[in-house]
Length: 412
Image (cartoon, rainbow, N blue to C red; front, side):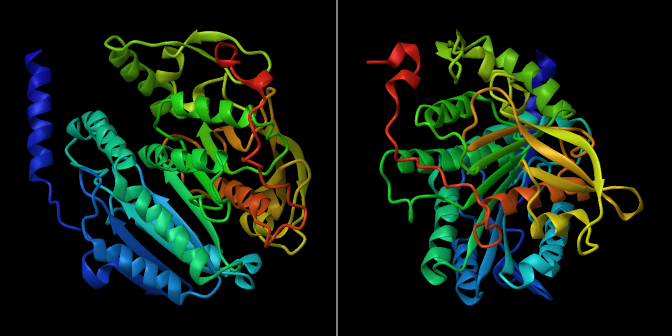
């Protein structure tokens, strides 16, 4: 007990000594490079803007960029606005801007939404900061400014570039938690009659290895299922490596301990084969490790092709559709290996909860690699009407819920 109090006291001391000033002040909050532009928006411990001028600068950059492809990224644990994660994000922006499929349609613009995911570099304390940083991410998601920034970016794109923009919202780890929780109420507003041209926070939302419990995922999937949304293009995509030990092993242990002080209702699993069980099963698991919620898996088709243009997989996935929600990955001797995002279970809704093979995403932090980026490029094309003529229809979220699909306990 004494050791745990000492740990908490040390973490509190480290937190108090960490600078609260923006890491990208003034003119440093916007970077213009050859081929792409990036803006930084930073948040403090309570989720407030560290410098409101950063958002104003980002919106001015959107206004000045013709046909913008805006990728807003929320980083995860152990990162901030000066970490190596920034370099990886910038590398992706530069590559996208060079891709033939993007060049003629968009100008790439990144918005790096940053918070103090990294509190210390001291071994042991660094690992023990997990729960402290999780609490900070939850405050960021629940308070006002974070979603205000997300909504302002989308609003600026719609207002300044109607019909000539596309927005992607991307989150990793605790950044995935922030994205999911921030946008959930906007999606709910769309379901209950919001203006579809104004209420959605992005054209596509992707989270990778989200370090969040699966309670919200269950609720969102259930709401979409009740409205007969099968066969639509994805709106929200959650990608989790089956080998992610942080969310697959460590997360259940920590939340299992926390669950001993909480009360849980009996809830219903989404789908026609509904069953009722304690909500604890969703509190102690992340979406990508909850088999009751996984509705897609990556499958190796064991088929190799030549790229029609001789391009790598990422560029090829941006240029071509692959049958059956397929995508290409770089293989041996310049060939491309075909994979598929295969629907599993019986709840195919626009919330795609995908279990990803570890050969694509190796572990919790393995976001920026050729194979993962190529897969996300394919998902981007699947959802983008400016690139994909064979696009599936958009979800009709305003459709009233079918009483027969509501959980048994709530049916009239």
